[in-house]
Length: 545
Ligand code: FBP
Image (cartoon, rainbow, N blue to C red; front, side, top):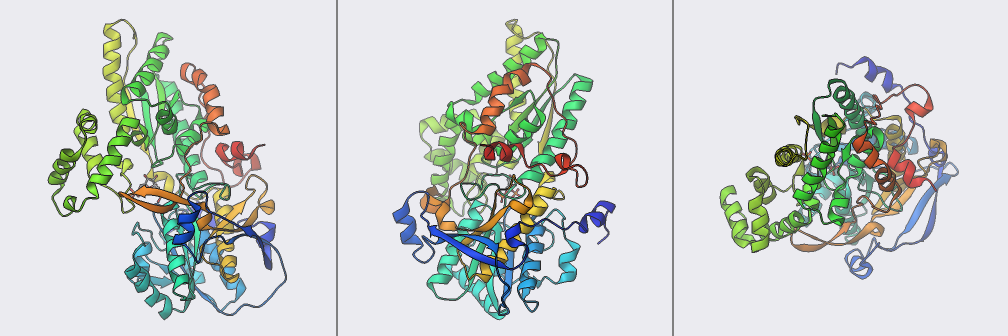
């Protein structure tokens, strides 16, 4: 692999570890836990992995460990830092016993089922230290949920003498990790399953998980780009930039980028849902801000749009919920895409059909057809930024006719998504991920299964971080998925009474009217700590007392 100068220099970075993980480790167990909701149902579904205690790692005494082999799987969308979870796991596993081996399953959970794997040796792992991306072993979205898949996976687990599988994934993948852990425990197969909290979307967080890895780097990458656009926008003063940022469901990324760059407008999907806003309300909100700036002679601005906004508009949310149920019907399977759209339309209520017909054809088809393997609408394929700017242009034409808009309106469109998922991890993500991988190894050594590796106190210096594990069942509740009630990890949406949103809401009217842009610049890996080691504003605000 030919390497850039940055990659070569960055490979030498030794991620910082919390004190509790630096040397020999002792696992301290807390009290028994219970799920966040639906306790009886979750307990009945996970009799072997429900109610286990929280675990914290503290300095302990050296002891010897029997040799063990470990398998690792990267699941779902890429997130900066995934390679450091693997390097942390590799280093810790080798420290526990140099005879231990680490196997990587290729292209996600499908690699386990299809017996597609490679041994991760020191030479391989060293090539990827502190790099972005998941290309060491690749990732995939195969859903591990069927007994046949679990049994097929067991064959290769047995062949390679694997004691534990580590699954690095988001809420859905970790839910499936827990189902797998429960299955192997129920069968007494002696195979442990450990999860790691990954997703740039930042929606896998709760009392135990302060942040999912990748959020920090992805937001800093997008914020750099948004800042650059803002500066261009304030230089040319002739365009309104409509910028869609990733984050399938929650608006954490959009909100964090807004806190970092102070755009004129940032939509927050959770607020749109709470206020029961229609598409037209959103368009009117943007158009009014454009008109106010135009009256001040400012025919330019920036609008940040969360990728998932469309799903949060109540009328569209209702439509999607019914489409999900209709598409789950057996008759909807094995028919052509066109037939599927007609089938869906013929089963919609009059109200939902009216909403469906009011959407531009491309958007409506996307809602009616494609789902990822976890049943999610593929919002990154919907061009919301264009949809909104076209509707704003129309609204402004009407306002002009009424004398309510006196300026000019020209739009540019951007989508920042995939480019943030594989950026070289910030110091925060490099350290956090290395610590998560080390924790995962210690959870395995402590004989745990059905746990997720965690690291807390992350706004303090890394030495003071607290590493451990949380039973995955503790984060579960029952939700409707593909027409059926399922146990899932509760997704964390933006809390409208939380500090990050309130901080934004207190300033947004000023940002809308003035040009209050902030230019964060690119991620820095070396230099003053206030430049290189700051957590996201979201995390800092959430953790501030
Ligand atoms: P994960 O939840 O698997 O981490 O993926 C997040 C994400 O990056 C979303 O922000 C985005 O909507 C989606 O993946 C895109 O998925 P794909 O890579 O399949 O196009």
